[in-house]
Length: 153
Image (tube, rainbow, N blue to C red; front, side, top):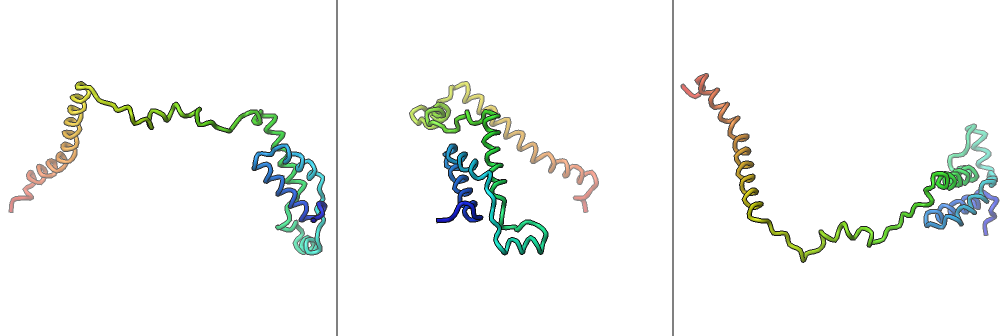
């Protein structure tokens, strides 16, 4: 069993709290965060040597109490913003009305004669515009070349 007042014990409890929080056990995570807010990491000898040599905290030892306080603040902020009152769970029936029409294969849309004629007319107009866009530059270049006599030798 790892003593909780050691560095490894603090990390273990912090990771457990984060895992509980991720799994949705917020109350259990809050209790662990509260217990860790007063946690003092016991520095190991190599950590003390690192601090003496570099003058800064060791890179592999984040402050357990500080992280626990930040996570506790997240819960307080959620309560203040009333974000804890939202339900993020979804029911299949809530969104079924939006997708049922696409999935229902028993209903087949049949266009009326008026719609069919309008579609044919729009297709002819679209084809005419496409041909004009493609042929007009070629015709323009051909007429310019004919004016300058490029084709006459």
